[in-house]
Length: 212
Ligand code: ATP
Image (cartoon, rainbow, N blue to C red; front, side, top):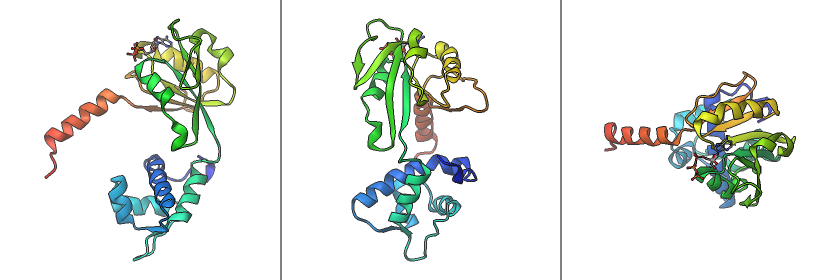
């Protein structure tokens, strides 16, 4: 994301990709405007939050008109740096890692996994989803300079030392799918996605906050 939107609250910034995906679909279907109520229904964010989020970046919807889809699309593309490709590496080509290598991230956002690393000899030297898999010992050799983001899908106990090496190598953001809480310098951005916790939380909400 570029510097212009540094003042946008982090919670708002996190919702931008969600909005962007929906606006892209609207644009592709030829729609020219959208109301905050329609957006709200589609992305499941309440409309007051959407109006507040949009006000941060100067998209002021008009009553009875809504938001101009082309304006929003241009804004999101620019803000999310969609014209610039982000190169990603993936560490840990297990079940989850393999699924990510097969997933086409380019479809919805401009990110591309270019290398993968593992320690399992049976995987080293193979290509999965068009991505070459190297031995983690050779990371320093095979990690291209332009890679700024890493996806961690390794067993939790090895997450921290691998993160340290990635940071040392210049990686700026880590998407951590392991349950390990990783420590990184303040200049590095780390997002934790613990699928087991997410699932547990969904089950909890279903039990304790059943919908009418
Ligand atoms: P699988 O069924 O392939 O073992 P999994 O997701 O159930 O997948 P995990 O034990 O979570 O298995 O390991 C994920 C991947 O991380 C595996 O491919 C494993 O070889 C790899 N791995 C384990 N230790 C390391 C390490 N130190 N560095 C890099 N990759 C590692």
